[in-house]
Length: 104
Image 1 (cartoon, rainbow, N blue to C red):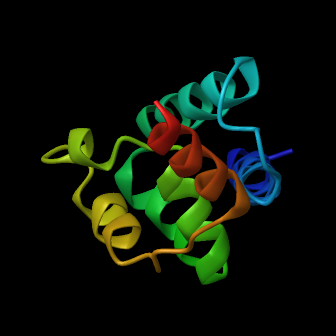
Image 2: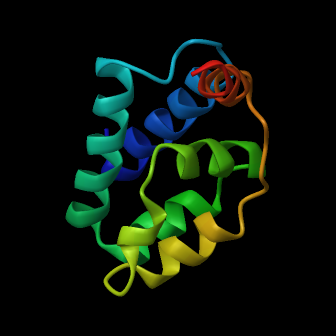
């Protein structure tokens, strides 16, 4: 499996995780965050951004939810532009997290 194929699977996994409530905590979240960070460093900005640009907008939005976009500049400007332009989707996992914050 190529790096891009592996990355595609992880991108789709991020979308699946965001579609489920109560999933934005724990090892799964950390694993995806570190996977994206490590793959970005390993593949480089151009290859990571090229792979991400092939994904549908909802998948890009989910990846943005698992990525610290602010930390991407200046080393990964192409990836940051793609993630910044992702639609702002209120995924079920995000809705639940926001509701929990309001209760605190």
